[in-house]
Image 1: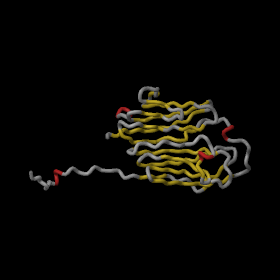
Image 2 (image 1 turned 90 degrees about the vertical axis):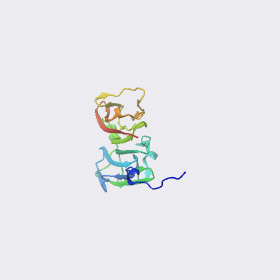
Image 3 (image 1 turned 60 degrees about the vertical axis):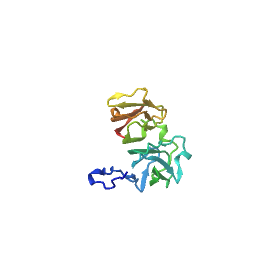
Image 4 (image 1 turned 120 degrees about the horizontal axis):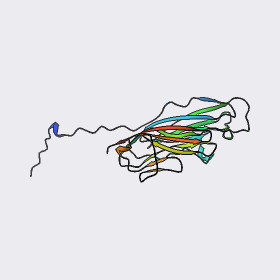
Length: 224
């Protein structure tokens, strides 16, 4: 049997558009940050990438996890996901000249940005965590695109000097645990079998006796 090897142009399907992988931190941390002893210093790192990023912090070249038990480690998302993440580092009682670095990775890509702390005035033995303050949400997505049918993890990590409570709202309704939604001990929200009906805004609220902090994430489920 002879096969016809000549295909008309219209017989060739157009190539599917592919989104290039990328990773960026924007804006970068400032070269220096001034800190007044006894106050709380919060560094913010905003990362955009495809696939979704993993973000961590370093102090003087050493991962923060080597200093503290609580870290902003975020589990990696599925390979096809596009996200913008905000990661905050609450700095307590830094020494003059300490260098803090935000490190972001996505697949095989990695980038970072650093700042040097300049301490103004004399050190104090009173840590900011000893002062009654509202909680701070230290890690969350501002937005994420992810394939339908996959498992989505929405981070909501919290720094609080006192006991705090975390709850989620989706499209103006409180998210209660069910077969597909589960609030993890870390405060993250687990969404199983992501569907089109999940599209919209998810709001994480962290509160304690002294106030609350709120972070919004827009979720867009993509067709396979």
